Image 1: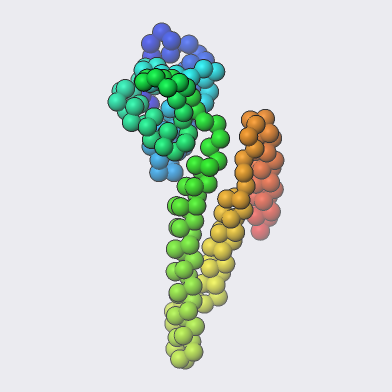
Image 2: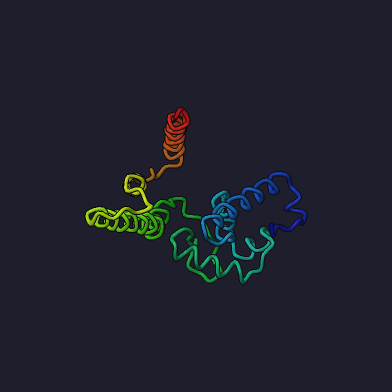
Length: 194
């Protein structure tokens, strides 16, 4: 990615951490966010101590201007905080990302699913009106109902997800995540049997 290979970054641990930063950056870029946000947040989240913007810039091999703008964005999202009041104070990651994630799910993914649901409802209504008039269409109302039901199930999952609140302690969160992963694996097994 944009990492530099100075003496500090030639350390095997440092290289692996930077690879993790790059991986998170790519992951969130896949979801339509800025790669640099994920890289910076991950670097700060993995550090024992906060970092200055100059340190972040040097470690990630990106410009200080990009770091400054990205830190401002991450602060607005509530994902990074300054440690101190002085200008240029070091930054630390806010580990509780759930409020930001749930806001995004609520505003973006929910609206996508809701738009699809409304479109299927409209299509079904038109098909029902056409059938009531005795017209035969090329479209199968039962298939429209099936897709409508799928969008309603997706909305149900989103509702459940939005009601969840991530536990504050990392150990509890890790345990919760492990149990959730197990549930997802069992759901996949059931779905793959069909």
